Length: 224
Ligand code: CA
Image 1 (tube, helix red, strand yellow):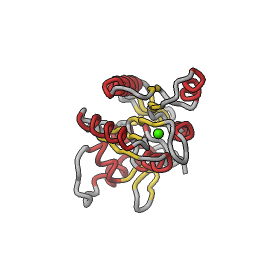
Image 2: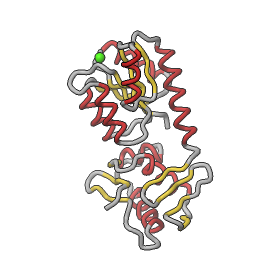
Image 3: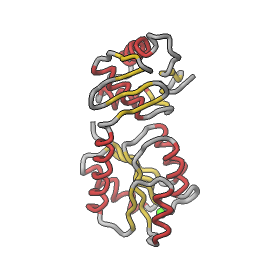
């Protein structure tokens, strides 16, 4: 499944350029033209990376960056016309991972996006933790407290997706899209079956539930 980039940029010309460029390079792209819509898009359908303009109508890029950052470890690249050292520092302080000054060449942006995504994949080698749950991507070891969980490949992939997006509501469509990688036609109950398997294993020692049902929407990894 290709990686998804969320572009938050109010200038139509740049937004169009980025949509075309990233699509051509094989990414999935969602474009939003203001901060509020961008934050909602990032919540509703988490991207792998955000390209965020600094000067936006309403909520500005710095504020959007802070709020995105509060939601988890999402790579953020900020675009801006500002170029003073203190502005750079502010941008990086707000949680941006990288910073590119306008005007820029698309190839330059693309190179930085690829570098950021590689960094994220590299950190995939490490361990994700949520509550008393830990998941090691390289050894594929999953622990609930001290208890080792024996998961199938699909159960592991599903839990990996949840633990990369803790506390976020993940819709059924999104989970099928990202974990199974194709459309089950919406009628399938295979996700419910897998959630049940996972819960059984996660709660085998009578631990509190971590995989919550969000009725009519999907599921979220969070404490009750
Ligand atoms: Ca702008």
